[in-house]
Length: 242
Image (tube, rainbow, N blue to C red; front, side):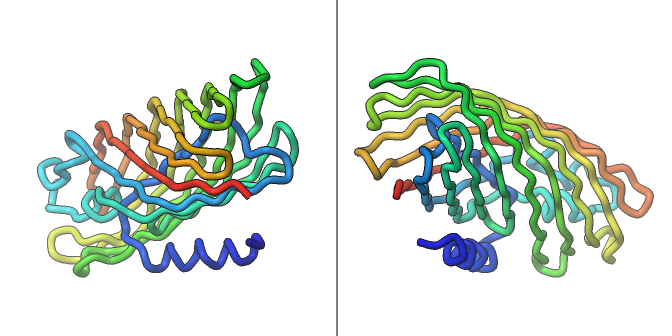
């Protein structure tokens, strides 16, 4: 599949999907091998906890910002990665209405039938927040830095563990006290990520879980809606290596 065709497929998926802010890392045990392409399809979920789970209790004026801009739920997900060299790859992911690009570098620690490495990346992302029952809409942009330790055992089993950190800006018009008003929010997110993959040669099944703490500095119509809490981001994918 050509990269132009892959981009069209990913864009179509974004248009047809839901609005939960669930973006998994799908790191794998290493970067994509040189001149090879990984294509993955699956799904992801966002499970907000604490104050993130029940925004009505913490939002003065019954703002819809939390329920719309930081929504939980399940979304379809697809991604593609291409190995530029033995140590670098580039990727593109669509998860719901979010689109993320990433560039990753691998430092090999041990080679052989059992292979281990450190993978660090930089991943800008953005997306739109769709309107739900006239509650408002907007957009979001951010930058994520993942860092993981990965193990590949004979090309059959992969395991990775590490951390993800990101900063994000959200903007839009959301309902508050019966009418829409401009809102903006800046958030930081950090937490561990762990995953595994099992398969044969070109085909693998991947599962992954991120547990992140988020804190948001939010203003809407002069009202502070600051909040913090944990969110779980589980994800799965079927990966084909070409």
